[in-house]
Length: 108
Image 1: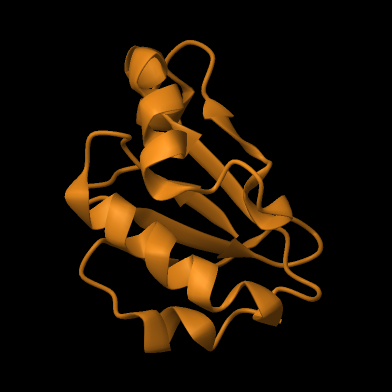
Image 2: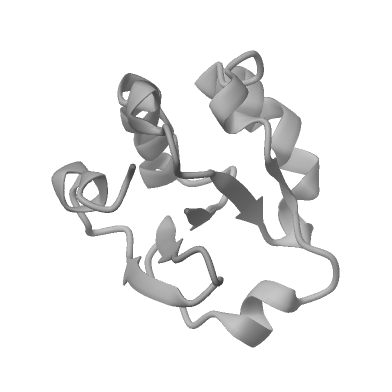
């Protein structure tokens, strides 16, 4: 699961809270969290505010290098949650309007 987010986004903070509540469901699903490089200065505050720093599920968090997100993804509403299969093929993509129940269907 790849989640594109902004550390300045209220919806993204709420998604982190929701994901913390279901962290035990991530048995065979790896979570990666990535923000645009221009948001790098806000990452530490986001991690502290959402209290995800000590939770193993949230350790793959960072910012892109260059403008990779803009080149690869067309997103309008953050967070964008993308699920890939074991061969890195995109299976499904959700935008910020997706409910947690929809997302949970893809978590293993």
